[in-house]
Image (cartoon, rainbow, N blue to C red; front, side):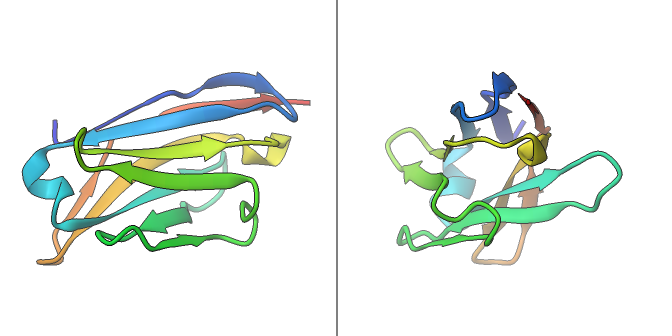
Length: 115
Protein backbone atom coordinates (compact mmCIF):
# COMPACT_ATOMS: atom_id res chain seq x y z
CA UNK A 1 0.00 0.00 0.00
CA UNK A 2 1.55 3.27 -1.08
CA UNK A 3 -0.86 5.65 0.67
CA UNK A 4 -2.51 4.72 3.95
CA UNK A 5 -5.18 7.05 5.31
CA UNK A 6 -6.70 7.02 8.78
CA UNK A 7 -8.52 9.18 11.28
CA UNK A 8 -12.08 9.22 10.06
CA UNK A 9 -15.03 8.75 12.37
CA UNK A 10 -18.27 10.20 13.66
CA UNK A 11 -18.32 13.64 15.20
CA UNK A 12 -20.98 16.15 16.13
CA UNK A 13 -21.34 19.40 14.24
CA UNK A 14 -18.84 21.93 15.52
CA UNK A 15 -16.37 19.24 16.46
CA UNK A 16 -12.91 18.40 15.13
CA UNK A 17 -11.11 15.50 13.53
CA UNK A 18 -7.61 15.00 12.21
CA UNK A 19 -6.96 12.79 9.22
CA UNK A 20 -3.55 11.29 8.53
CA UNK A 21 -2.10 9.78 5.40
CA UNK A 22 1.25 8.04 5.37
CA UNK A 23 3.03 7.51 2.08
CA UNK A 24 6.10 5.65 1.04
CA UNK A 25 9.14 7.88 1.28
CA UNK A 26 9.91 7.60 -2.43
CA UNK A 27 6.50 9.04 -3.27
CA UNK A 28 6.15 11.56 -0.45
CA UNK A 29 9.35 13.50 -1.04
CA UNK A 30 8.56 14.23 -4.69
CA UNK A 31 4.82 14.78 -4.50
CA UNK A 32 2.25 17.45 -3.95
CA UNK A 33 -0.09 15.90 -1.44
CA UNK A 34 -3.82 16.51 -1.35
CA UNK A 35 -7.07 15.55 0.27
CA UNK A 36 -10.21 14.98 -1.75
CA UNK A 37 -13.67 14.03 -0.58
CA UNK A 38 -16.72 12.42 -2.06
CA UNK A 39 -20.12 12.82 -0.50
CA UNK A 40 -22.93 10.36 -1.27
CA UNK A 41 -24.33 10.99 -4.71
CA UNK A 42 -21.76 13.65 -5.52
CA UNK A 43 -18.57 13.87 -7.49
CA UNK A 44 -15.19 13.72 -5.82
CA UNK A 45 -13.95 17.21 -5.01
CA UNK A 46 -10.61 18.70 -4.06
CA UNK A 47 -10.41 19.84 -0.44
CA UNK A 48 -6.82 20.98 0.06
CA UNK A 49 -3.34 20.63 -1.39
CA UNK A 50 0.17 21.09 -0.03
CA UNK A 51 3.21 21.30 -2.26
CA UNK A 52 6.65 19.85 -1.62
CA UNK A 53 7.60 23.33 -0.38
CA UNK A 54 4.51 23.31 1.89
CA UNK A 55 2.54 25.91 -0.04
CA UNK A 56 -1.14 25.27 0.66
CA UNK A 57 -4.41 25.72 -1.14
CA UNK A 58 -7.98 25.17 0.03
CA UNK A 59 -11.41 24.93 -1.46
CA UNK A 60 -13.66 27.82 -0.53
CA UNK A 61 -15.96 25.49 1.40
CA UNK A 62 -13.27 24.58 3.95
CA UNK A 63 -11.08 27.67 3.99
CA UNK A 64 -10.59 28.92 7.54
CA UNK A 65 -11.78 25.63 9.07
CA UNK A 66 -9.39 23.00 7.70
CA UNK A 67 -5.60 22.97 7.79
CA UNK A 68 -3.39 20.73 5.68
CA UNK A 69 0.17 20.05 6.76
CA UNK A 70 2.99 17.63 6.00
CA UNK A 71 5.68 16.01 8.10
CA UNK A 72 8.66 14.95 6.04
CA UNK A 73 10.19 12.98 8.90
CA UNK A 74 7.08 10.79 9.02
CA UNK A 75 6.16 10.90 5.32
CA UNK A 76 2.72 11.91 6.49
CA UNK A 77 0.19 14.52 5.44
CA UNK A 78 -2.49 15.68 7.84
CA UNK A 79 -5.86 17.34 7.51
CA UNK A 80 -6.98 19.08 10.67
CA UNK A 81 -10.71 19.68 10.40
CA UNK A 82 -12.35 22.11 12.82
CA UNK A 83 -15.85 23.52 13.07
CA UNK A 84 -17.17 20.54 11.17
CA UNK A 85 -20.55 20.78 9.48
CA UNK A 86 -22.96 18.05 8.37
CA UNK A 87 -22.12 18.94 4.78
CA UNK A 88 -18.52 17.87 5.44
CA UNK A 89 -19.76 14.29 5.66
CA UNK A 90 -17.94 12.31 2.99
CA UNK A 91 -15.31 9.73 2.29
CA UNK A 92 -11.97 11.53 2.37
CA UNK A 93 -9.20 10.38 0.07
CA UNK A 94 -5.51 11.08 0.27
CA UNK A 95 -3.79 11.82 -3.03
CA UNK A 96 -0.20 12.19 -4.17
CA UNK A 97 0.78 13.82 -7.46
CA UNK A 98 4.46 13.34 -8.17
CA UNK A 99 6.88 15.55 -10.08
CA UNK A 100 6.74 12.89 -12.82
CA UNK A 101 2.95 13.21 -13.00
CA UNK A 102 2.25 9.87 -11.38
CA UNK A 103 -0.92 9.94 -9.31
CA UNK A 104 -1.59 7.77 -6.28
CA UNK A 105 -4.71 7.37 -4.15
CA UNK A 106 -5.27 6.16 -0.64
CA UNK A 107 -8.15 3.89 0.28
CA UNK A 108 -10.47 6.54 1.73
CA UNK A 109 -11.64 7.19 5.26
CA UNK A 110 -15.22 8.02 6.20
CA UNK A 111 -16.06 11.20 8.07
CA UNK A 112 -19.60 11.55 9.37
CA UNK A 113 -20.75 14.79 10.95
CA UNK A 114 -24.02 14.59 12.82
CA UNK A 115 -26.25 17.60 13.34
